[in-house]
Length: 159
Picture 1 (cartoon, rainbow, N blue to C red):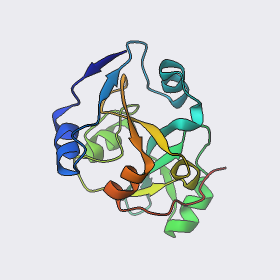
Picture 2: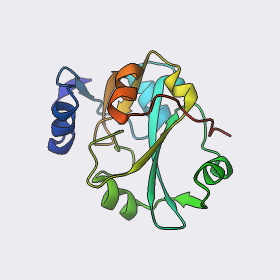
Picture 3: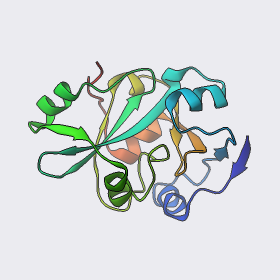
Picture 4: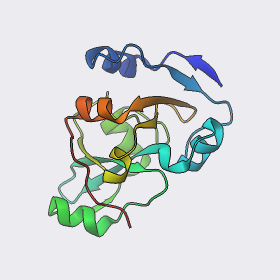
């Protein structure tokens, strides 16, 4: 593990959100999946906030920040949004967020993306999140995650 600079877009997002003191860490073995990240960091998989991008039937991207131990229930998401949803493909993820799958941070995206956060994740004190690449992560207090996303209450969208 080594401390690294985040990608410029994420560095700017940190500054805009008054998170200049957040450290980004790179793990050579990779943090592409929640399990990979938990193994690399040495934390419980439920301490990982995985950022997953979905597309609605209206071609609208939705970012779901999910507890790393759980899976998204697409039926619950569809009911919440009142639209059918599917997983975004790699091209759609990069187009809307500016990042590759496995490295999507919770904010600082190329385009505005509607965001939902799993309520189990928000019950944590701190979480680890992707930092722009499939090898980088940062730790954030959930109180800061709530503040910067404007999401105070998570949703029950786990299987």
